[in-house]
Length: 344
Image 1: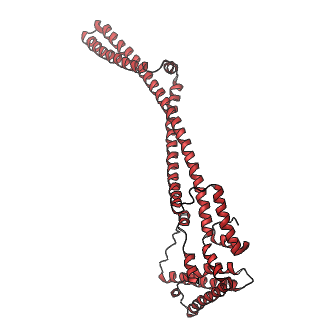
Image 2: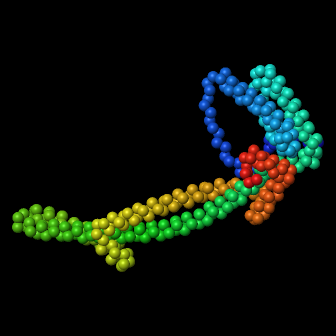
Image 3: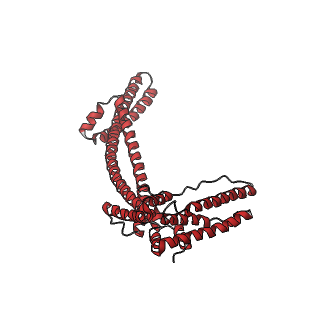
């Protein structure tokens, strides 16, 4: 015969797949109370409040007019689990300790009465369907995450396409910037060579004044002219390597045109970086979803090949099973109490 202990043990456990989809619990850090006596008093108040709350709930569950025996048995088990978790050592008053012991006996006698009304077959049905709300939620979450996974994969493909376009734009911007740089170097080398030629000519003019000065200025001008010509040649070769259309475009630039090329290159790099960040974030999110979906599929192998129609059918069967045993209202109470689904 199924006992209250068996059912409370069942209530204390969850299916493995349910644990996969449980939200990450954010543990709130309570402010430490320095005074040990004050901490003990807070724990005592909590224990006493729970004790009297469970006592009050039992009165409602004992009243046959409140609900069907099935739903009362189910709710009694949930409350009995809380009673088991209440440590009587935290109750300072003898009155509270006695009440705790009495409440355990009353919960047991109430359960025995309900068990006789329901019969062994009904108790077995309750055990079989106990975790249906969890399974329904987990299956719904599995399908939801599977769809999100498909969406993230599609998004990743879209981002990859944009990254490829950004690479092309960045390559074009870098090519244009390099052409501008070669053009400016060529123009700078031309000006340098012209200045060096002027210095060399100045040296020739200074011959009538001083041979020494003329020689020094002439040699300096010659050296500068050679360096200028070499720089002009090198930059001219680099500039000539670009296609004619780009050279004509760059040659026609004014000052604002050169600034626009620099801005285009900067924006291309920024866009590329932003897309790479988005892709990495999407990849991390996708990996997390893959881990959850993969773990669920490993625990529930029949879920992986399920179509949406098959999922709806399985959910409906579990839902109807709860409704038939606990009644329409009772099933709704169970689901809302577990805070898993509100579809009923």
